[in-house]
Image 1 (cartoon, rainbow, N blue to C red):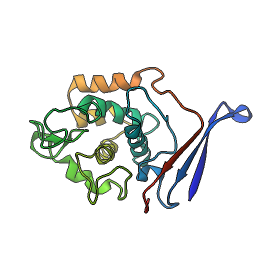
Image 2 (tube, rainbow, N blue to C red):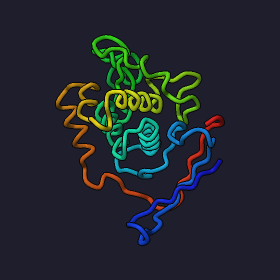
Image 3 (cartoon, rainbow, N blue to C red):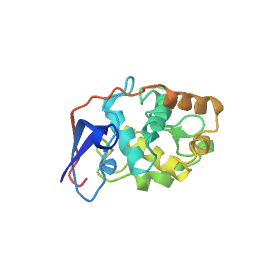
Image 4 (cartoon, one colour):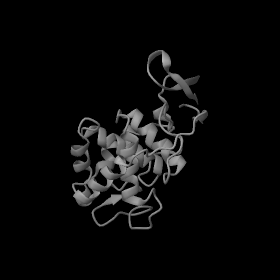
Length: 201
């Protein structure tokens, strides 16, 4: 099935079409479940384009609201610089607290084992996800796992509470909040955006 979503600006009859998003995939699965999204920016300064698709799709799938993708991106930037960090636990093993992967999700130790609590919520056939099973070290899988955790902890209704459950460290919470609050964070590219999904999505 192909879905076409019109991006509109304006109010009522004065709305203008800004662009069209085209998604190819199954009609029984949301775009978010396949690593795509039905809205949000196509490009954001400082955020890898591939990762942006994961943030948007995960926020959509887990109902994190219109700013959800920004919180996910802010956490990912703070925890691992979008997976580019060479610190312990980002690409293998764990950090001293027992967190792992680009989102630094707890897999044991004082970080608890949050990964096992959400791994089954990561959609099968996720574009960019690890095969055959999700991996905490895979960017797409980690973002979707983080979105499931944050949703379960009260986001988007209570972002502060969810962030405290994520990591009750005031500097990290302030860093993520500052990232989300940056003015005009997104540079939209209007036009057609095509996202294809793996078979089964």
